[in-house]
Structures are given as structure tokens and as C-alpha cells.
Amino acid sequence: MSVEQHLSSQEAMALEDRYGAHNYHPLPVVLSRGEGVHVWDVEGKKYYDFLSAYSAVNQGHCHPKIINAMVEQAQTLTLTSRAFYNDQLGHFEKLVSETFHYDKFLPMNSGAEAVETALKLSRKWGYEKKGVPENEAKIIVCENNFHGRTTTIISFSNDPVARKQFGPYTQGFVKIPYDNIEALEKALQEESNVVGFLVEPIQGEAGVYTPAEDYLKRAKALCESHNVLLIADEVQTGIARTGTLLASCGNCNCADRHCSGTPEVKPDVLVLGKALSGGVYPVSGVLANDEVMSVIRPGNHGSTFGGNPIAAVVGRAALEVIKEEELAENAFQLGNHFRARIQEYVEQSDLVRLVRGRGLLNAIVINDSEDGDTAWNICVALKENGLLAKPTHGNIIRFAPPLVMTEEQLDECIDIILMTLKSFE
Ligand SMILES: *Cc1c(COP(=O)(O)O)cnc(C)c1O
Image (cartoon, rainbow, N blue to C red; front, side, top):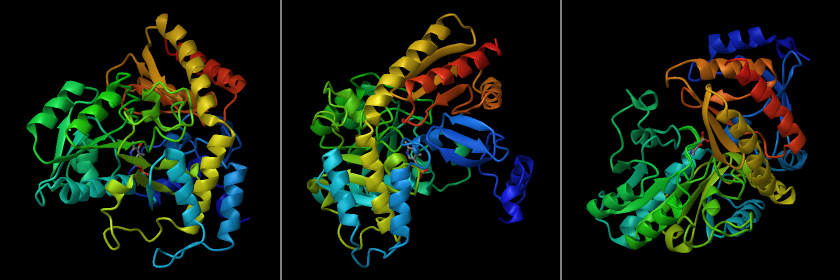
């Protein structure tokens, strides 16, 4: 082994600090190994991972089935570009389409690329199928959204840190408050040439903001009556994270955790990423029925790496793991248990204002101002106690472990969290 592989945490952080752009503010921990719900730092200390790479690692770190699929494919064929067919992509497209009940899938790599794809698709549908005059299409978005980091996407962000000094911005977006059905109705009535409504079923980055039970269902009904596409960004909430295969299916009363929603809550355009690969490889994409997807023709859109053979086998294995190990069911059960135990604490605590979430996507709100540092300090203390989590917005801490956790492990984690919180009282 080379010398570089034996850096201490301090040395590894200094190296990144010196040679890497400072576009993140990481917790001071340097990880070198992961397995299931655990990660280890370079000194060998073991942690529970309660971020799961922003819900990319739903299937657990280094899941053997996904890793084996990747290694085998990596030794066979890695990239052909879409100038040629490859023998893996079709299998993956079929599995994704059938799993989520859409006619077709368009593969990309990152979540932001998939969101961009959904925006382009919706605009083109608007011009071709809805008859919107060229360059007039509008897409309704929500305040406090997070959809990625490209120039167009940050154009409709209202986070000044993500947005300021990156203009000029892309036109054609109308912002309304989240979880406000009246605001959506008003915008749909007052704005002309609206082609889509882009929404996160739960706003993850905003602090796991969970809307009213019927929000998505009512949004879908309004979109339908105005001939507007409901575009659901499930990059973070999808793939079993919230206790159902998709968060949008949590809005119907269907008891099947593997179903992807009844027509009344089914998005017209579905955006997936993150856990679509189990955190093993960048795999994202967009699903839609033929009526929408058929507006994309050769040359309209693409990506050199999108739909490559490794992505295809990794994506397939990742979805199979979700089903075989019943991870949606597990997330549902454990999520209820987690919130019940944390809620007990919240009721007799001045430190934590509330716990909220669905499945294993949860957050606590610390009784501190938005620019206070209590949440950060709690996360540093949690790290010392063997559990990794990160504040989302100032005083909010997100808790999102891999979905392969057992109830026994979760109870141990809750003990760590409660013990740490009590030390801040
Ligand atoms: C993470 C995320 C994205 C962006 O995904 P990247 O892979 O980081 O580009 C988009 N939307 C939501 C809701 C996300 O959580």
C-alpha cells in the first residue's frame, strides 16, 4: 500500500483544504470504509451513518449484490455512449418503467441533470402538445425548493447562498409557497402558458418539511384540470426512503408499499436519482408516459454517460435489493418507532421543538435561531458518540439512516441521540 493511504484524519482534512475547492463545509470526520448501516474513519472508529449520503445509500453501504453487479460489468463493458446500443440498458429501462408504472424511462447521471431533463421535457410537451407559444412556457416551483445546482435550477432557488452572483438567471419560473394549495390554484388561474408544477413531495433540504396529507393529491387534481404536468422531484424522497416506494404513493390509501401510486396522486413526470443506484454510481433519470415522453426525439437531449452498462446493472441490482429486502416496509415500521420515541423526549424537552418526517426521512428542530450553532454543535457531539448526522438549515438536524437497519440497531441509535441531546439541556 502506498503512503497516501495511511493519512490521519487531520492530514486528510488538511490535504482537501489545501487542494480542493471549498464548496462544502463537512463535519470533521474522514471516512475510509462502509458496510451496511456503518462507516469507519481512518483511525478505525465506527459510526452509524444517519445521513446516508443524502438518502443515496438507502440499500446500505457497499451492498454485496450491487457491488458484485458493478464489478462484473466493469470487467466486461463500461461505456459505449448512446451512439450504439448496449445489452444492459433495455433490461434496466424495463425494470424501472414497470416498477414505477410508466411507459418510458430516460436515463441520466446526477439528480440535477434529471431535473433539467424533466424541465426540458415539460417545456417541449407544452409547445408540442398544449400549444403554448414558443419561448412562453412557465413552470411553477415552490419556495425553499432544492432541485440541484445547475444554472437553471439555481435560477428558481430562493437560497441566497446558492443563487447570489450566479446570474443572469433562466426565465420562465413562477414561485409559490410550498404546502399551500390555494397559492397553486391562484397561480394556475392567473398565469398563462403554464406547462408544469415542479414539487418535492417532502422538502428534504429545506428541513424535511412534510406537507399536508392531501397536498399532492389536490395538486395533481388542480394540474389535471389546467392541463399542466405534475413534475415530482423524488430524488431524495423516492426509492423506499419514506416508507413507500415513492413519497407520492404515501399520499394514497393503497396498502401496497411497492405500488407507485394511484392515478390521482401519480406524477406525470417523475424524477429519480440518489438511491436509484444505492449510492454506488451516479444514476438518475426521468419517467413519463408516452404522451409526454414521445416529444423527445433523437438529438433533442442526451448524455455521454447516461444509461451506460455499469449504471444499468447497478440500477437494476439496487431496485431488486429494495424489493427483495422489503426496505419500504422496514422504513415504514422503523420510522414510526423512531418518531414515537423522539416525540416522547420532545414533549418534556426545551431543547427540541419538534420531530417530523415520514418513513426514515426525519428531522428534529432545535430550539435555537436559524443562524445559531447549537445544531452544528450537537452534530459534532453525535459524531463523538458514534453517530453521523448533519444540520440541514441552521437549527434543523436530519436523521436518515440506511434502510437496512434493524430495530435493535435503531434503538441503540435513538439512545445515542437522546443521551447527546440531554447533554445540551
Ligand atoms: C440531491 C437532490 C437533487 C440533486 O441531485 P444531485 O445528484 O446532487 O445533482 C435534486 N433534487 C432533490 C430533491 C435532491 O435531494
